[in-house]
Image (cartoon, rainbow, N blue to C red; front, side):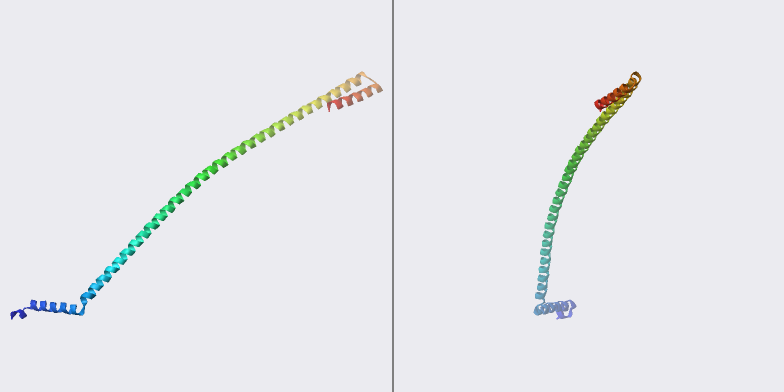
Length: 163
């Protein structure tokens, strides 16, 4: 029997015995069980990854929605601020115009009063000059007590009428 003299044949027999021992011990079941556990773990990790991806997509959508809302709110604030600035500018312009009109009217009133006062001062000065001239003329033309009485009465009359 030359079959048992070849080393390759012994390797084949040892290999068959090794496989038989592994089958007897149940190594194939343990290997299948380990592969099944690994498969389940990988499936679980994939499911978790899908779940996390879906949550991330939902969060991204939510934050994009919040960003759009914030941009709209900012645009509304800017629009409102522009409208408020225009309103304040219009009010300020109206107040300035009113202030200028009041100041102009006040200046015109003061000018009118100054003109009236100047006219009154000129009249008073003219009256005093007329009285002084009349007094001088009457003193030169009339003499004595009668002249003094006439001058005094005339001066009182003129002052009463001019004032």
